[in-house]
Amino acid sequence: DLVCMVLKNYAESLRHGHKLIYQSLPRLLTLWFENGGSLMPNEQHKINETMRSMVRSMPTYVWLTVFPQLVSRICHTDPETLRTLKDILVKVVSLHPQQTLWSFVAVLKSSQGNRSKPANEIKD
Image (cartoon, rainbow, N blue to C red; front, side):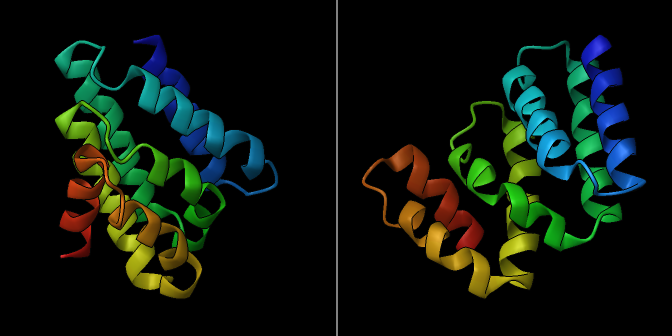
């Protein structure tokens, strides 16, 4: 429950300004990815809903600051977290292809199936 509150507060701070985006957003993502799948189902759902809300409310360019961190977690083991991550990646790649495709292609061409399969699903 504490993790949910911390993530919500990070998300709320980012809605009010981007002055500390290089500290807040990577920390928020680290907490989300590290706790994704290890919490109770209702808490996990709250966390993913917070992230989906952020995707809807924040400008897409904000996600460019953490795009490498997002791509590196494309093989996350929790299905709901992975689904939310895919939604973020689809939105960012579709709206900013020149800035994102060069790093996304590396994952598409990965020899590791657990990395290339989700990337190909995003591409399609």
